[in-house]
Image (cartoon, rainbow, N blue to C red; front, top):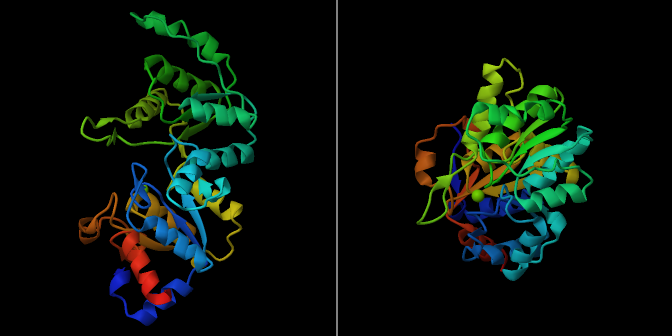
Length: 315
Ligand SMILES: [Mg+2]
């Protein structure tokens, strides 16, 4: 069994060895740097201190509701200088995949307006969505079949679309069925979204599953989607290629979620540090239910703690 170490409890020489063992740090954002964009105490100072030590600091989020420009602005508001190129979001890794896959046909995009705009900015055609009618019978839906069948589509994307409905799901299935090379892209597979005291609200899991079910029932062998966010291979490939990472063991990944962050870091061969300020708490480690190699190498309560260790050594 791999042993897990609390960074704060390590002897000073081991803490120093840890800080000397990486040149680049990737940070997840929600639950690590901020909660609902409120910085976690000590986190901004931690990022700045790591930079002062000469470390490259970058960010990897699965949050697609804000642009990378917006995120870098938010960091600046917290006192951390960050370039747009330092931030990775699912949109960037998706565009990387679309380029590699030579997608030229229009895309069917169920996503926020900002995502559609960004895709268009990168030269991708988005299929115009016509206003939907007042449906009452199966024939009302089937009226859309022929035009869907004849429509060339290069990729279907399921993202944070709050206007998703019956016909959109049905069309997504038709596009995937009739375009054998069409990419089936999914950003979010959450079943529910924690949104504070009025929540939870419904996530997109069930819509994606509906399309997969239709494909399965119809014996269309296309039910495997490509995930574009963490912990997918797409993100790992994007990070490694974009930042020219030749020595993954000299990279540290800091996250709050075992299933997204630690799995991403494991796939990439990075060192892993889990903070307990977000999704996973100590109980998740006590009741470990994943392969052993996903375990974090180090733990800190939060980035404030991580920062205290750093300051004690280098101040
Ligand atoms: Mg997180």
